[in-house]
Amino acid sequence: LEEKNMSVRWNHAIVVGASSGIGMAIARELAASGCKVALVARREEELKTLADEINGKSIGSPLAIVFPHDVTNTAETPEVFQYACRELTGLDVIFYASGVMPHYQPDEIDPQKDKVQMDVNVLGAMAWINEAAVRFGRAGSGTIVAISSVAGDRGRGGMPAYAASKAALNTYLEAIRNRVGRLGVKVITV
Image (cartoon, rainbow, N blue to C red; front, side, top):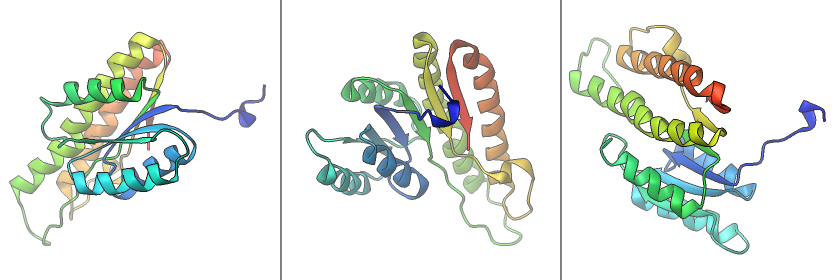
């Protein structure tokens, strides 16, 4: 078989950050391919609207399931993760697309805005990806995908905390890739 002609087929996915932007687009694409998708984000109404849209287009059983969760509440992550896997009846891939980048004034320093970025962009990602890494490592297969940014490569004056959060995410993903890649798990930084 030629690798260029092979395509990946995922049947069960979790998309964290599915209520808007890139996460929403990923969820739509996965469902369009027939993949069953757990939609995770803190904004339940947006998730329900997306699930209704996806399920309205699906033939047969619903493809989208809503799981309201604030990623900054990392103590809840293991329970929500396990519940989503049970409801999906499996897991092939997880996408971590949750992220924040608040606006700063040119010379503003705001430790609270900095903290929120670290909580969502790093600690929330770690909580979800840790769960997936353990599950996939035991199974010897699975794919972890996280949305990062070129901001993680360079510290820019207008958004130092955002750049730091994406740099931390990149290094964390590299370490997880080194840990579970040898077990058959793919870890992708986008």
